[in-house]
Structure formats: C-alpha cells, structure tokens
Length: 259
Length: 354
Picture 1: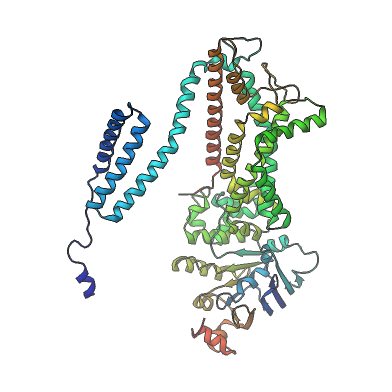
Picture 2: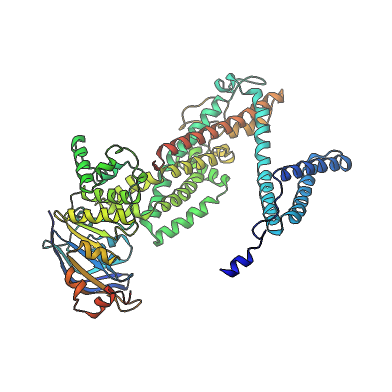
C-alpha cells in the first residue's frame, strides 16, 4: 500500500514570490517523516505540494518533480483530484463536515465522490477506519450523531479516520496536534506509530519532542530572512539529526538557540 | 504587594447601586408627569405626552444615577434608555400597521373571500380567490426563475470567479440592478412581451419576468454573502479527499450554507410579493380567476388591493373591506412563507451536536 516519494529540485511559487527553493529528498515508505523548522519556512507549503493541495490557493505553482513510486505528480495529464485520492491529508485544525454525522464523516470520501457501495460494506469500512484511528470504542454507540459534537482530539481522529477510509498510500499531516491537549496528542502519536505499518506518513510539527518521538526521518527547513524562500537545510535519520546534526543551524534550532 | 493592599482600603471596590425597582419607578413617574402635562397644555395629545414622558425619564434617571452611582453607571443607563427608546420607536409603525390591517381586514376575512372571484360581482360579496391564486402563480414562477439563476450566479462569484474581471463586473451590475425602480422592471417585462408576442400582451408570466428582474439581485447578494461565510477548511477537507470542485460545492459548500440561503430566498420572495406597479403593467388586471399564467391577464393581491381602494364602486365600504382583507392575506402569506422557511432552515442547519 505505502509508496516512496522522491522529490527533485522542487520550487514552489505564489505568483512571483518563491516560497520554497530547490528541495530534493526521498520520503521512505512505511516510515514517519517529520518536517521541522521555524514558522514561515515553507514546510507546510512543501507538504501541500505532495498532494497538489497548494493549487487551491490562486497563483500557486510548482517547478520540479515529485515522483510517487516513479510516477510524476506534476507530469502532463495528471489529474490533481486523482492524486488526492492516493495521498490523503489531515489538517492543523480538526475540520469534520458540520452537516454530517460521525459515520457520514468517515464515509465522506465515498459519499462525496458519488461512489456506489452496498450499505454492509459501508458499515464495515466505517468501522475499520474508526478502529484504525483508535476512535471506534468511543463513538460506536453514537455513529449517527453529528461529528461536531466530539471533543477536539476525537474530531482530529475522526478526520484521520476520514482520510484513511479512502485507503490512501500516503498520509500527510499538517501540525495535526497543535490544537490538541497532551492526552489527545499522545493518542494521535500512538496512532501514527501504528499507521506507519501500512502508510507512508509525513508530518509537519512545531513540537521537536514530537518529531523525536514519532519520526524515523527528520527534515529541517529554514529561511534566510523575511521574503527569502524556505530551503531544506538537512535531512537524515531522526536519531542523527537530534544528536549530531551536520549543519550548525540545525543544532542551533534543535537546542533552542533560535527559532 | 504592599501598594496593592494599601490601595484596597475599605469600600474601594464598592459603589452605590440604585435599588432594582428604581428604574421602573422613575419610568412610571415620568409617564404620569408627561401625560399630565400633555393633558393640561395640549388637550390630552397622547403622542406629545409619550415624548414628554420619555424626555423626563431620561433627565431624571441621568440625575439620580449620577448622584447615587457615579458618572460611568449614569452613562450606561443613558445609553441603554436611548437604545430601548429607538427600538420602541421602530416597533410603533410595525405594531400600528399590524393592528390596523387586522382590525380592518377581519371584516371580510371569511370563506367567501377565499373561494370567490370578482366575476359578475358589483357591490357587496365576492372575494379575492382570483388575486390570491394569481399572486401564488406569479410569485411562484418568479421564484422558479430567480432562485436557480441567482444561486448559480452566487456560486460563480464566490467559488469560481475569485476577483476576476468578469466577477467584478457581475457584482457591479447586480448592485445596480438592486436599485432598479420596480416600475422599470414592469416596463421591461411589458416591452419584452410586446416584442415577442405583439403589443398589449399581458400575462401572469410577464409579471413573473418583471418580479424576477427585481428578485435576482437580492438572491445573488444574499447567497453570495452566505457562501463566503462557509469556512475554507471545509472546502480543503473535501478537496483533500479527492472530491472534484463541483461535487465539493454541491455536497459540502451549499449544504453548509443552506439554512441561510433558504432565509435569503424567503426574504427575496417577501420583497417582491407586495410589488404593485410592475404587475399592474405586466400581468394586467381582471375580475376573473385565471389559472393559465401564459395567457390572458392575471390578477394579483397587491393590484387587487390597489384597485379596490383607488376605484371603489357602490357601496364603497364593501370595496374598502375587500382591500383591507387583501392586505391581511398578503401579510399572512408572507408570514407563512417565513415560518416554513425557518422550519426548513432548522431542518437543514448544520448539526451542533451534544
């Protein structure tokens, strides 16, 4: 299921402004890759280019290559809608659909795309996705209640369930825990460790302990100053980045000397 | 720490309070004083008495509050009294209109009124069945034309247009259309029909066209505002699930805003249902029931009210009674529409949970 992502010389522009400059890296399958760096260094922008979500913002465009198991996401004739069915995404703030029940939220990917599926299969898929997101036990008795009635941490796990119900190959998470309390954060971190058996997981985080706890590979992004594009400074095994990084900026950032 | 304890000498956190009954008491006193003065100097003119009472109340409460409670609380009471005064002032015409219409309209608000037309009727009796069905036909068709056009325009403006030149010019022209005098809309529909089917063609459908011209801009503006209120996060959540834009709009954006859209549409209907001038020109005038909106003149309630009131026959009271009952029927129709709209809106509103 999970796939390798290879990025070559990726530049991201908003209109004429270059937000991310010359990123090349490989994201391994069945592993958690964490992006860290100060605010505004382009890590979220870069994450969004991995499922072409940046295109939602008018004027955004990309130069370079992103290969998903050898297939270029930016090749001619590639449909961004199809890309997003293979590369799921979870956002910073939990965003369940307010008009839908818990179950309808989990099945949103099926229902919104007008896919036909027998009800028994739908039930099974919903249970499987909710179990996958460690939410089943908490909501199994109130599947028909609105999703917005859940707590923030439960809503975020509902959004994860919604993303994995699409059975994607890659799961992108943009600061999934920054709006949550430590207990819910722990629940989601445990979940990431479980999910990496099946998916390629990429997470953007401001919490360096979180990056150190959950990720196998860490990439550090930085900007030279306001208005300058974000750059990938260093990428490597998490142990190495957090103990003996090659670049001094990385060490300064991790030890809290700036940023 | 020491400075804090020092400044908190006894009584630093308390201040005088007027007793709870003080304000109503002063209000009653002011009312008595105002009405008495009016009775003495202006022959019991109630309007003058009420104004005087309000002014006396404002002055008294200001002085009393300033002495007992201090200037900040006095300012608070002054602002509150002014706001409540403005609210009551705004309510007076509404209450007065409702009272007058119900009082005068009840005289003919009976079964005959809803079952009979004015065909072959001179003087007493008869009813407005032809005008009521006409209003429902004309407004219904106008809504059928305006809601899809208006909603789709709003979707274009908020979801696709995004600051393009075309979207900007549409917004501009919609704003201009909002200000069109209704008689112009009527003339437009009349001349359109004259061009297509020959001069002098009046029909319910022509009336609907005239009302649509007035209704579309209202629908566009309210729907656009409501679609913009839908959080972008929901669109992104949908896109991230691999849902195409049009399905996102149909299944996420519009359902999230549907309760507001329904109220917007109801408001637009209420805005046009009472139009008289364009219907007089485009839909014409008749005393008989006409259930074919594409042929022949069609009576509508506002036109019926206008005609009964402006050109009464003998005895005039019968015509005036029918006019008032027509006005009452219009108000009832708008109210029923509003209530249904609210029910529908509540049915579809985003579930808040718990």
